[in-house]
Length: 83
Image (tube, rainbow, N blue to C red; front, side):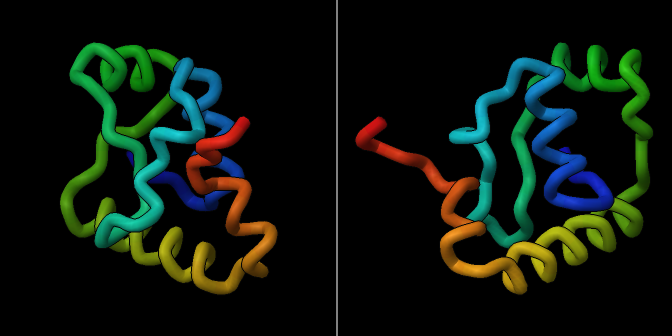
């Protein structure tokens, strides 16, 4: 699952019951992996089905946004093993 911005992505993921620790920050492109069931729920909540070109474009934008975040701010999306 990708979105237009990291804030939008995390807000929608939270609405779907996904944990921020599941955010795939270090993948080729930042995203959440979701099941087919969660995908169906996301669509009923307003998510759009997109083609590959659109998905890659959005994912590239997320990667750029993530790379421009200050290190401390970016850390809030990383897994915290000691909380």
